[in-house]
Image (cartoon, rainbow, N blue to C red; front, top):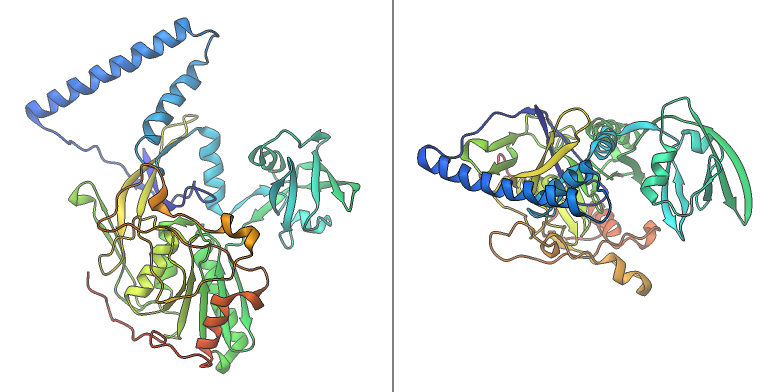
Length: 441
């Protein structure tokens, strides 16, 4: 059996997974203690079996045995913490697609509005974009079947499928129906977007940590460096509302801007489960100044990256306190057709030994965004500490913070503050920080 480990917020990136590691059997007890513990466990399992048989025999309608077992497993795991769970075969496959960053589909970001699918934006150079699908289009039918009554996940599942197969969409645009036939293709999720702010500041937005993130980041940094040339003052890395993803990608993204030193450590139930990860002389920017943007939606892998750069004094952190998810999940496949466990197996720590569990990363410069009154209730996240059954913090726990990012960059106070610092228009003693070579743990 193999396992994968993930660091992800229980939301958009809830299925994120990473490095394959062989599971070795572990003896937790010995002697009489082991026999006593095993006896207690088997008595409880007998109780579970008795309940199972009673439900099968006496429930008002004949139950599905498979669903009963899956529900029992789900209940066992959900009672541990907010991030441990059971994934059936389909959910496991969806998770693998999500973290691969590529899948067969149409190529558009969608949301649900009044029971119908609304196009947020088509992804450039995908079948949806080539077919003329536009932002704010409403999808009412898929292959002649109404979308009304489906969940967003069910609708997305219908739109995904094998490459070179087609699907018919009925789109409502400006109250007029349009029939569109689209052939599915390989879709590559863009986890990195980059641009120059003016001619002298590189801006890189990382939306999630999937299998493509580090390669895309390095490509973006090289392109921005070539475009700006000698004018380049530094880089702004935007991790706001990035819910996390793959641990190995968080590590390689971190070391892309570090020369040496520890990036993160993970510590589990047993001492021999401790792992430490280090940078290997990989700062591709040659120590160019850096600013990192975070907010209440920056979680898990995002917090690893921000914490590593903050501890090494490699970057100045701007924004609001991050989410505070400081635990590691391991994806454990259960065999063909049986899905997988998503089990919390460790906590992670920044290079200085900080745990951000239920605390988050505190920015060096706090910048709070002006939030429209009608959005205030929806853009303030309560953070990890508000989740029922969360792992407790070592010390004082903190609540979450705002997660609003304006659509118009001219109204983006955190981004504008970062650009002004880069250009010397604003001065702050935390920027630029004095790098620490190999921060101690």
